Amino acid sequence: MLKTTSIITLLVLFIFSCDSSETSAQTNNNDASGVAWVPLHTAIENAQADGKKILIDVYTEWCGYCRRMNAETYADATVQETLNNYFYPVRLNAESKNFIDFAGQAVTEQELALAFGVRGYPTTVILDSDGSAVGRQPGFMDATDFNNLLSYVGSNAYKNTEYDDFINRNKDN
Image (cartoon, rainbow, N blue to C red; front, side, top):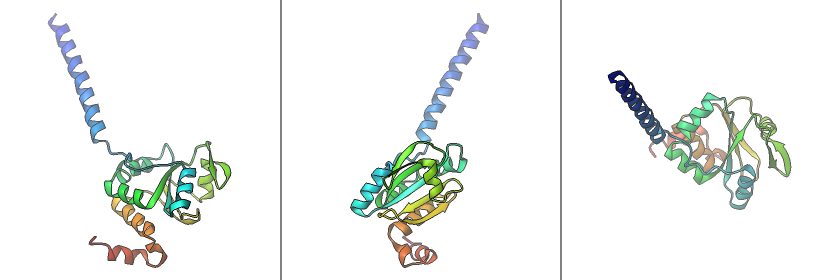
């Protein structure tokens, strides 16, 4: 009887400890839910109407640095604010065979990633409001560096200022 009671008590404690750790993990889990992700065709339409740029996060499901970029960089409040202010953010799965509309043509996400010259993940592709390529940045970036890049491109400083000069000028801001 005592043995049965002990086993039941241990099971109950185990269940509650698993449940509470799951709850705290959900509470502490950073994510990119503060980013206003939109489909590519919506981003293009909106960008043409108001002049914002388009940021495309090219990722794969298996990519550890893609998950890290989502959990750390895109979860950062400053990054979210800058991103939503200057860009229409889009997610593009580089291995997806799903068709999307791009420039009036149906292409797969995979084909579009290749057309953008993406060879590694994550890669950030930035398009101007007219759909022309501004540039692409391969690899993981921490929140500070990524926010600097977003501000540099989003504010159009890239058109007349070297990146290092922009960073040095804005260090104290």
